Image (cartoon, rainbow, N blue to C red):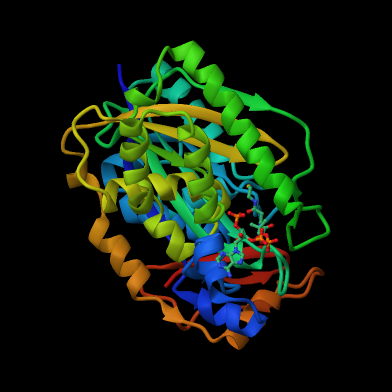
Length: 389
Ligand code: COA
């Protein structure tokens, strides 16, 4: 029985900044951000969009009544959790009207946890083939004003429905994961901003990639010639290029040219959104499937997931015939092109806003949210209130 991704939804807030304008204000050559880092635009999350509301919005894009009845497991992958106790999955389960006899939990391991969620979903569906699982990867990447990580911020969510006989990507069961206790990136409980040793995190990412790939090759008896395309965790798009270069360093000319040929479509959305942590690999997959040329039936895609701290995994999947009919290309292009550009001053104000860290009630401005969009409308008596506009 094949198990994999049956539907993919995506959401990003409706405001962004232009990276060239950020570079000008920071006194940096714009080419550093657009070429050196590889980012054109950066999504900005207003206070009314958090990990829960973004995940609900991504899920609402794809859920139909049949899915709501069949989903009995909601897995919420994030490193931007909003409560130490209650999982974001419970709110999303409610906001998206999924039938009540379901399990709902949150998973954390930096940018990796949506991949763990996919693996858990596959185990669950193999025992219960009639079940569907909602997997969410949702985050706000925030390093702070004037920091090295500032050009690699972003916000957004990817929602995937996993099922038997999937219509988009059947996921192979052989994969290699690896864990090592390192401090390349982390966010202590007291801080709204991530701490990162940028250069070390880049190197750790590449070390993990090389090690899991080499072991995957041995285990699966596959090599680069078995892959039509590769997708990577994309904290910023230049990192994806570095990863591709590392894997194709000793490849045949044919393999290197084929795999490099898919790089631009596989980062098209990431370039306009920025880092969405847990969802970044899956935004790259979505970008490849929607913005790349139509892939042949059963073409194999390799996927590398990396979450600082650190866990990495290399796995793969094959595209299903007719997968294009199940993609929401026009909706995603419209989502990105209908966004409003913020001035750098507006962005700076938003980035420094935070919900009260005490018991004060707060009412948030949700005026600009589009109809049907889930927003965080306020916090009252320490309870977060989400509403659908
Ligand atoms: N034109 C074109 N490219 C330029 C440039 C210019 N004027 N100026 C610099 N660059 C290039 C650099 O050569 C470098 O390219 P390389 O990485 O291929 O060598 C790139 O732009 C970045 O420059 P660098 O000086 O290394 O930037 P930085 O010290 O500001 O750090 C990050 C960049 C990515 C490390 C930093 O933004 C960061 O810490 N980000 C968050 C961490 C992260 O996402 N880690 C990923 C692993 S999960």
